Amino acid sequence: MDDTIRVIVPSVRPTRRRAVVPTIDPSSQQQRDDYIKRLCNALNGWAKNGPFTVQGRAVVSAKLGIGVAILKKSRLAQMAPKLPEDVDDLLTALDRLRELTSRKFNTFELIRGAKVFYRDRLYVVKPIGQRFWTQTAALNDADEIAGTILMHTPQGVA
Image 1: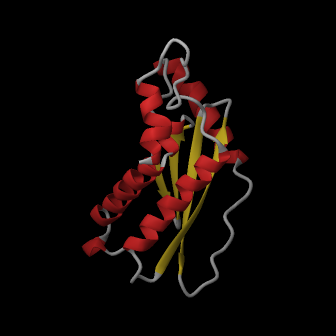
Image 2 (image 1 turned 90 degrees about the vertical axis):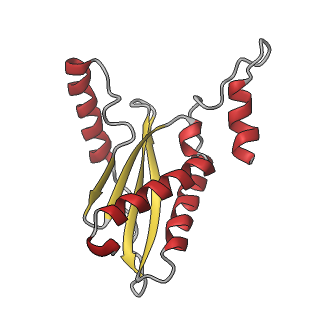
């Protein structure tokens, strides 16, 4: 409900005095932290009887106009290892990919929304606009992630 009042309604009903469109404004660190918390809580809630837990963090690049939600799966019995602080290599790689694709395809839209599973991590590439980092977006992304995991693992076991 808060997403609708704070972000969506002002965006779909701009006025001459208030031409701001919050959905496309860059998200704040607090919005991204809240998104990650909601996303992890949803995934962990759905898997509460399972042996794993998910933790995450988000990094953004204003230059690229994208952010990456990084989720890490670990066993409940283990102390969850800290997520890597240094993701400069990832952002550099995405920047290089942007350069290559923009020359060839004149767009970088190919990478936005990508979900890359690698070992115990999931990287979700998202635009930095507020609408992509709302609580609603977190729940929608959690649903999509859970569906992907269930569809791509033997007998639905992750």
